[in-house]
Amino acid sequence: MTGKTRPGGRTARTKEAVFEAVAALIAERGYDNIAMTDIAERAGVAATSLYRRWGDVRVLVLEVAVEELMRERPLPDTGSLRGDLSAWGRSVAAGLNSREGSSFFRALVATMMPAGTDETARSAALTPRSKQISTMLARARERGEKTPSTAEVLDHLLSPLYVRALFGAPADEAFAERLVERLIAR
Amino acid sequence: MTGKTRPGGRTARTKEAVFEAVAALIAERGYDNIAMTDIAERAGVAATSLYRRWGDVRVLVLEVAVEELMRERPLPDTGSLRGDLSAWGRSVAAGLNSREGSSFFRALVATMMPAGTDETARSAALTPRSKQISTMLARARERGEKTPSTAEVLDHLLSPLYVRALFGAPADEAFAERLVERLIAR
DNA sequence: CTACTAACGCAAATTAATTTGCATTAAGGA
DNA sequence: TCCTTAATGCAAATTAATTTGCGTTAGTAG
Image (cartoon, rainbow over all chains, first blue to last red):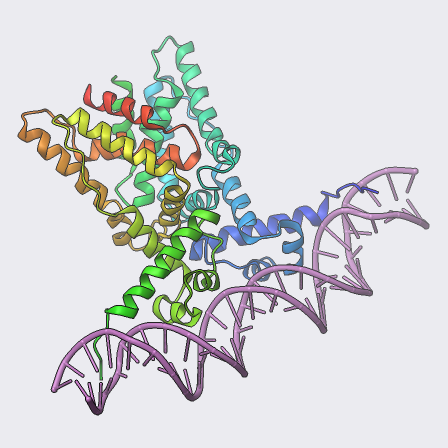
């Protein structure tokens, strides 16, 4: 009755072409001005395949945004918490300030369910960042450094970067540095 | 050639009906699952009128979200900065944690242009909040109190509330209180 | 190498959004 | 009170997205 999936060859190639097409279209025109037919054309696949596999353009766009934003990147390991958080904060700021990164981020934010509905997906969206922070803090404690909590780093380093990036206030790497100084100095 | 607009009677009634319809639909199903035809039906107007007046559902939704979020509300005036910021923070938190407020906020975020494009509209979106904060801080200085800067309140009170509300982390009124304590104590 | 069938493609059909043409209503100035 | 016309409505036409039916390709197990 129930067959096996076939993740080899063509399925993987189709997904790669589709994800590249979505990423390119998001960068060009923002995330909310894209139709399945646009993606199909750019990717060179049949729109039917997209509808059958993802069902809805928002599902597809969200999947691509999550993958782009949460892609594993090597964590900084500079020998001090200040150095680690500074490097990390600068890379987050740089990512958010690109047109593509900004659009992915807003796609993520926009596509999530509103408050009062399923919290699981919404909470999960920050999990990768929380884990990165926890890893850096654990290393610092191993070096004997006094650390803020993961929540404090989320609230007072990541959140200001995110909100400034969303609303157009300057959120450059110097700003990330100042946030780290303020956080470490407590 | 160019006639005058006629903002009286019917035009105003239509706008009110439309805005109520949009607000209700956003609260029910999130902002990105609404069509002009849905709004027209709920408001009891012709879809033609919506297309002629607003052109595009995202323009309309954004206009409603901005009006709802930025509606003038009386600022707290409790006699101390701690009291003012606590009351203000709590009301921001409460607003963001309602299904409607959350959806309006995400409509605002989602509809803005990405980084690298026109910054004016994006920067303007935080202006009302900045003004509220500046007013409270000015009152505090008049009382002889030492105050943080407007930017510090934006970054370390509003931003954590916004990001937690977006991503489903607990951002209740107690959390707002703790942020204020941390801000004031520096 | 063969058989089964998941994944994909094509074309047509269906659904829905959007636009257009023309008519009606009502705001506002003379 | 009358006239002009902005704003709105209705119905049809157009455009575009989405779904359906059926065929083809290719992944995978035996």
